[in-house]
Length: 369
Ligand code: GLA
Image (tube, rainbow, N blue to C red):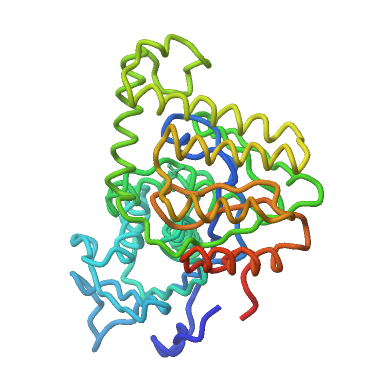
């Protein structure tokens, strides 16, 4: 996973428990989760591992106050100490802190901890490195403290940690995916009822993810603005959420850009449901292409770099369809491609993308170390 110092090297002993969770890539259903809609993620092979043990007393005195927890993040080469009453400055530590706070809120008595995080989930590209960290932390706490939490409850606590302590007003897509998804089949999730089932990828296809090499600038402000627009549109349409809008229903009266935002959500929900009706790889790819076009034109969360990378992906003979994935505004693109041809396709894509001025990198399948 990484060559950075492990738990033993940092804390001079073995952990008591280890919790793990994968990152995820969303195949279809973007910006639908906070509208109570449908999503279709799949887990990626890269994982986050959180190792824990109860902290030993320091010079005979139990660690306490803002020194209670010692957190080491191997890939970041960063170490933070914090207590339960002070929100850490560092964003990565806030995710862990949030999980401890939420576990406490659910009735756990959290002792002072030594915490070690190791991860090969790519960060900041839309593959849910933060949700993987939250779910892995909560799984480790569940084992250490014997908490009676199932995987859905873990996802719900993780989402609350992200909203309340990390300050990101996300939906439940990422945490449910990191807690429940599988790398071989996609997870169809109704984010309103949390009903879910696994769905096979179209026969003869595999997932390819390439980073555009551009940071997700404006992701937070743009994301919050889109959420607010959706809430405003739902209020104007007199529905609890945009999930309840039927195609074409009374939309003509909506002002722009609300009309386009609603159109994206309504058509995107329909695309997810079409995609699970066992379409061919070609049909699935068409739905991904339509999703990207809708995110670009109606939802306006794409960027010139993402559009360029999607174009390059679509030009490859082995690619059935491609789109931006995650919140947008930068980060990675996902494609469905002919099984067994992802690596050579990625080579061709990266070359063509470089010729167009981009600096991308292959993320899934994970390049051999
Ligand atoms: C981010 C959020 C998710 C979801 C996606 C967009 O990943 O964390 O809840 O809204 O954006 O589909």
